[in-house]
Length: 267
Length: 258
Image 1 (cartoon, rainbow over the protein chains, first blue to last red):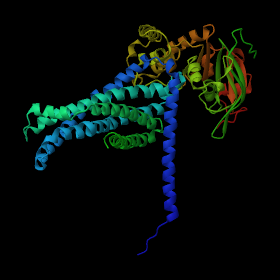
Image 2 (image 1 turned 45 degrees about the vertical axis):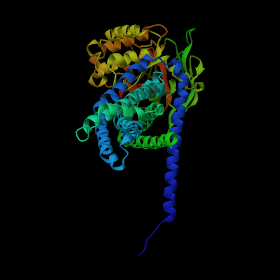
Image 3 (image 1 turned 180 degrees about the vertical axis):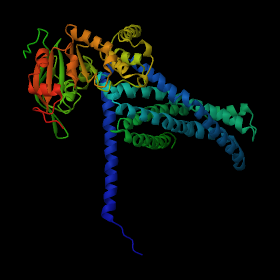
Image 4 (image 1 turned 90 degrees about the vertical axis):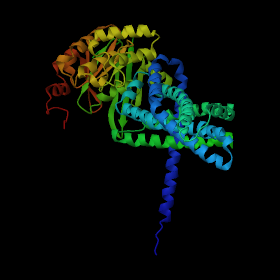
């Protein structure tokens, strides 16, 4: 059997891919640096002009996402609790159910599922909104008014995302624990007092700290990456391409960072 | 034309400015001064270079040769913060209006005031309300741009561009896509602005004849160069072959039209 492998071409493609990725990282780095530099003009900023953007973005990212988030939290919480209660006794480790819930839901699933919901709803919406505004020359119009678009567009969305994500993670955890408990009592019975005590025993200050840390990191990264890709399109037909890239790349970054934080604090 | 300025001096000066984009020479060694209080109309055919005049003045065109001075200071020397601050000093009515689509008429006009001014929120609201009334926009003050007619878009954009009461107002092609019956409020407001002392208006247009009541100076560009710079009377007489050809929309003359 004859196999043709064009080694130089193959290597060339890999090199091109690496260079393209490197250029992307560099471009994102310069974008972040330009935002940091624009903070010099924050003293000229009247925060009242950001107020409505923060309120609208918090409502869209936080309140409007609640029904979807609560359903997902309920289902995930119920699944984890049912699996734990039906399988742990087989191994004689039913006393660790609380620890497992805290580990799985509060430390990992809560922040991760919340981030995924926010990326798919708000990340895509932010990227599409900014891209459309860029194409409609609204961003140019803001710049011509002497408005620092980096602060005016990105800063309020970061503030809103941090507030919304932190609140959503807390709500996700509560719904997953207690909703899951209510769902699970149809199959296994656990006294509510025992359930709560198990959870409280398993919780530590570290878990709360990490929830805040993850809210901060995701709250900054999701709008930052969404705006980065939102500002990229040079024509209308590029908008869906960059919106899709914004969602995929943000999800990738979120998973990598989540794994990194877990390794850093729990390994 | 005698362009000696009043003691308040020149608000904008272009000195040997040339500008190219993707290898095409769009502005070719232009030098012109605009005095504070002077109203000026730039006109010319498509690709004559008039569409880059405002962009050069506001430092939005990118790199160019020569110098542009605003209030005596070269804009090339401005850093990013200075650019934002200097842009507060003028109003800019873009050709496509540049309104923010997720804001209604009221909020669009209020935007520069909320961002830049030291007025309280109540004072901003009061000022915008009076602007809305002045421009006869009360009936659509809570509508978003997608629900506005062309003349309402024009008036909203005009209201926003003069919200900070700038010394210099730049207007690009305001009447090109308008029904002239619907723009009387705008024309009247523009006339008031142009007649106000120490307020300058620069209008970019393909229809200079509509501004003879407003402007005292007309400048024509062709292939990036100034081919006419004269008073309203000189413009109306149309003795310059370029102006004559332009006003008569003739194919015969010094300009080769496609």
